[in-house]
Length: 486
Image (cartoon, rainbow, N blue to C red; front, side):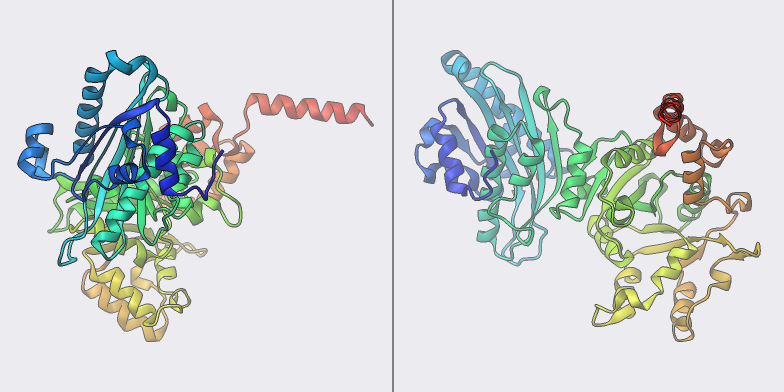
């Protein structure tokens, strides 16, 4: 049973007193903070087979090998550490105590705050472990960002989350959601951020890591999570390191032909930018928590997964975020990469960006938000919309209050905003809401409003409320029963 008030020392002591749990600790970069908690709790001889820290890079390379690109605080280094240390535990101890022990290897590779306080503090933490003696191994891996402004406090937070990870894996494994929540015991999001989690192994075969990532954002553990086009979870700063990001935001329920037209033409114009390297461009579809909730409703997890599956089938990366305002989104993207980024959006979204009421809580108002939004290497590509009278609404006839007109012109002249050209006017009448209603009614012709493979997926899985034969039969049966009862 989950006890939120269980302290870090109590957790470490309980593990130490459980004679089945036995293994090694390997910690690089910020000291042996997790192992230290187990030593200080008492009874560590019941848990710790070995603890080490290959702090020097030469020693680390000699033990675990080198990393491509020469970086040490990366997931590949963590996995090498886990696998090597776990294999050593099994090799050296399985004959002696394998029948009675649940072996583990805990590892982290971390860069904490330097003396000048100029670096970004983050790290990879993971556990490879058995849930039964002689049983298969599982993994839980997380990526964290430390937010304390003192090195010693960051080290303390690392030790706490390390203990939480070990305790959760051995005592909350039956409920991955509980395990996830327990990672922040004795911590706050002001101290540490968890922006990626991955469960793997036979005992976690039913865990959907995309849902776990959604819960990270939903519970405020991070502001954004990322999936690859294969649906696998990614750590944003590692996946987007030295990449050009081209992003489209929307509800995408479902993605339609007008979205495809927007992406196709917007991408062509982005690639034509003189400071964009085509080989480094990644396309991301972004879903905000606001759009996932659809108003006051809670998030429908199946609907979320359906949208992710469809977007991934088109080869898109998918991001979920809590960055409702565009300037916050751009600030986040600029933390991930220093290369130029592009945002694909419709003219109604641009109109919304110029609504001053959204920035009343900022001391500098709209100018403060625009300083963040447009001072970075970012450009907005605007897809025109069709007016009721059949005219096209674009940057050329964009309506903006008189006192903001010079600001808008400045952004146009300085190449911060650009109309998407060569659009297909036949697609401009398509709206997500109208397509969704046609799907729900099973109205013929909706298939022509979405990409062919998207229509196929919707039909095969009866997504977005599409009636199927079983639904129809049940409805007819209910009608007959109702009539018979009259």
